[in-house]
Image (cartoon, rainbow over all chains, first blue to last red):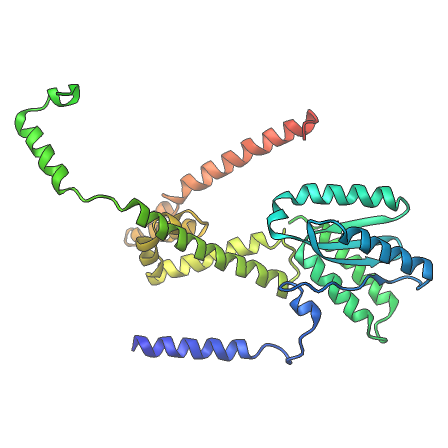
Length: 157
Length: 158
């Protein structure tokens, strides 16, 4: 009887986990598990100057040896920098954030940065970058999404 | 002869020797290994639940802690009710008592034990018999740490 229950629970578990979406797996779905290295994203005007700036920010952040995955999204006024920290370096999260803030402020004094090592923020940034590829996804929606991500980052409880 | 033994009668000393001969040795290393695995398993489940909240809901790493703790306590309460957590506790010892799930177990165990004494004075009065100490000293130590942090902040140390 007990064995039967065990088999039934196992079958139910497999059946439930089998019903997981439409089978299409995007980069943001796997962002928690693997390195995605998303390209820098620009929400405002795609001028060469802005593209160079956002690429330069990503390059500078990626050059920090404690990190292994970086997503940069530049909006009108705010620039979001989400990153993943190497496992053993996670003991020094605050120090890394301080160092990054200092480096970015010194190098790009005109930009307003929001930096985060939170996985959720990283996933959301990758998702936004994926949505930006869709021509139906307007700049207005992208700006709203970026604002939501920054608001989420500031949430404490 | 030591001072401790000098007050004892020869019969008492003889009994003590006999007792020591038959006393079972505590398997400390085995208990530690068991606690390590059971505690680690509970924490791994907690981490999986945290990722679940991050992935499927609008929680960040920082905010996912609260619902994770609530879920873990709820699960341990259910498992205590079904009699599963008691067996886990018997096997894992401190590994099952130290994580937050041990708190849920302490609350429900006391509630089950005293349910025959009625809902108000039995369950209500004794539910926090064990967990009350955890709450009291938890709140008090949180207050002390917060006070120290505030003072250090005011003095500009941190």
